[in-house]
Image (cartoon, rainbow, N blue to C red):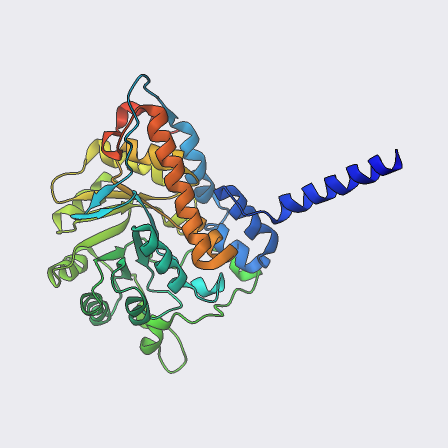
Length: 373
């Protein structure tokens, strides 16, 4: 009897140990790993939104309002997640959104992420606030599909310098983020005495003698300035931060090749519409057209969320926080694993809904009421 009790206790302890140390197999497990190990300041910077987090939470909650409608007795033995974006082919419709200062999560930072997206044959948007120079990223992964994210700076000559750099370094597109007109309210950063331990190296040469970034103010950015940027380059320009049909129409009218429907992960305005609600509104009132594509980010935590966004009308989606959980866990391999999870879940859902390709996914596969309540 004593032996059996010992054996039971030993087996239980080992099983518990395996649970704690096994490789994450879901996005949630990668997130939990980060929650358990990241310092509070770093964790809140990564996870939280502006002010009271209303919008950040609403981004994720919005997906539960969209119900999937499957179709059965369809031959789904030849499923494919491949997609075409801006005339280029990728293995699945999920890329990595621009996320700054990635060395805070792993020593290799953006280098590990670009290697992962290259291995997965998908798109990485590289933030202007990255902790690795654009030049080093381009050198590390010359053939990777990478888009350069920039802002419309008060000093437009700086913006144009980055446009030239994107051309010289063979970036595939320029992503102009438009939802940073003023600094957001992030009280948790103040409470945690947040400081950027890793420099935004792409901006170092533009600091004044006191290390300030005053010339980077975005208060004066206008559609006219955006049009000047678009007219200055042959690279496709994508406008990120669009939440209304009105702004989608203006982006198109000013020559953008696409938009990313996004509220900055809820990190700019607390109380804003969720990205998914905005996507529904935009597609209904200013649908995609030839030469103008609609992409999405905000709140995706699994393949079913990718499916929902595609069904509502996005051609491609980007994820920000989940890849950073993977990066923190195991660098390049962690990011690759997160992308594999999303692709695998999406492929499974294609089969479960009677679809053989992402092109077949449309509004008839979902049910929801707008606005989401």
